[in-house]
Image (cartoon, rainbow, N blue to C red; front, side, top):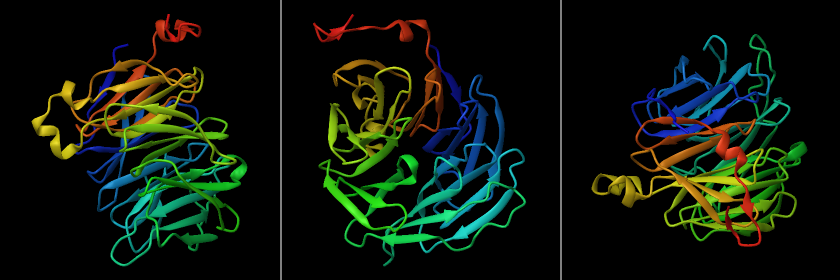
Length: 332
């Protein structure tokens, strides 16, 4: 499984995202630009240029018509995917850490950073999937969490809830229509660093600096599975077709210059989703993995690291032929 190395950024990666069909891969980093590639061969199609600060988040609507980006310049920009033209900008008091379309593509979730006297805030904007349409200026929902800083978030199935991760390791569930807090539980000992849903959105995975990842039920936030690693985790994804999760992280970036790749534990880790056992690792990055995305068809995954590289992996036959010995609880 030889990866395709993409060197389209000069600074650490912050998020990578496949479109719904999986033929396009978008990447954001701290260098103010967004790149888009063909996922099958890594050919770069172009860049989206216009932000004045580091990029934190990216998402594309289900029809691959409009791209949304959130950045440290306190803005969200909407882009025409095919041309790279910026079609709308929303301004905020602080940096935008999360952007995500709902499954219908007609609403955009945004989460801003808690800083400079401003509370972290969740916004929901209506979106018209038409590059010539005028977009709404005001959100239809807006709520804050003064006592707890948001770090990650996403939509549940049927747009029923907004699930958020927090600095104190907790996870919250809000009514997506009213913004009312319905449930909050402490899941991790340290901050939630990533939150990604399964394809059917009935459960999701969280990762944390406390060296664990957990799968939670979306409906009741019950912890269903726990995966224990030997390094802080920055990101995790659920594979669509096999019972695996892929986790990434490593030693903190500030210590990377004094640590080799082996000691820094900069591998992508594969765990069995049901039995919670680690079944393999994949080396490659020369720094912590900051973001992982699974291909929607389950045919591969991509990772972005502190080293500025995106690595695109296409699974070979042995991955799909892999069987797990349930009785002996080890790979067969």
